[in-house]
Image (cartoon, rainbow, N blue to C red; front, top):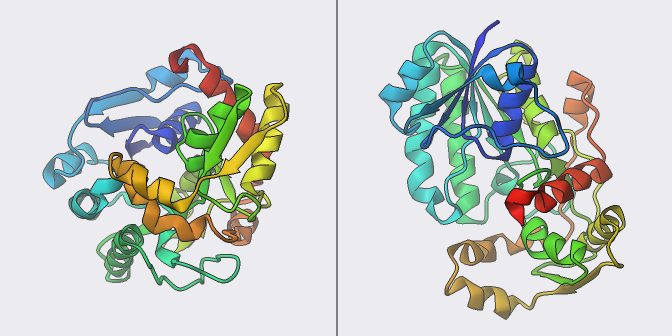
Amino acid sequence: MSLHVVVGAGPVGSATARLLAAQGEQVRLVTRSGSSPQPVPSQSQSQSETGAIECIAADAANGEELTRLCSGAAALYSCAGPAYHRWPTDWPPLGAALMRAAEVSGAVLVTTGNLYGYGEVDGPMTEETPLRPNSVKGEVRAKLWTEALAAHEAGRIRTAEVRGSDYLGAHTVSPFSVMVLPKVIAGGRGTAPADLDAPHSWTYVGDVARTLIAVAGDETAWGRPWHVPTPPPLSMRELAARAAELAGAPAARIAKMPGFALRLAGLFNPAAREMVETQYQWQRPFVVDSTPAIVAFGLKPTSADEALQETIDALRAPAHT
């Protein structure tokens, strides 16, 4: 049994902590509040699994504190997610603290990344796609990985990055899960600032956790990015239609939100304001190729139906009504 330190108890951090505990590992979950992993209504958790997770209240951006918590750890998982509008200010100190903790402790640092660093592309994204960000958030993510990779190549740390597309699964947040899904399963009409018929990749959050753990445990996987095994793309309209069927709701109704409406919402809502610069991801095909991870780790992507069902179950759970 090895010690694994997970930073962040959002959907990815919670799934990673639960999976590690189920595998019999010692898990230390670090959050500002010391919160426990988020529950998944459709899954049962034994007392032994949840009891194996040590929940610590700490500021992970404090390099000294995080280094102390990582003493003796085999792996350090970066699963935190600063508020969207605070990425430029909150990610650099957190990234530096993670690298320092990995360097001093010797734990392999596996970071949960995303596809923002690629910027606008003309075809499916692979791990070989150049990092050419065209947004502030993309620049932040690209810089974090570039710095971590440089430290890896210099022999200071051991690291890898795991990248997924927009998430499905319990408690996940995306334009679909926030603006469309709740309306559709209630029989209403959802709206989203997107080309509703453009192919889009959707990554199951549980597959992110499985990939993080697989990469951490395979030293030949370090020093490069990996795309999470992700099923074939579905347009937002197709995803909404499937969600309505799974939920036993009326046929899905979905409409495109005008661009001016998103900009207007951004005047009052920081999250909406931050979505404006990433509109390129939603107005044209946005597809990820995850073949290398599927081949290397033998991980089969969870079907969109299964991921959708978990998302629906979590929305319908008592805590979310």
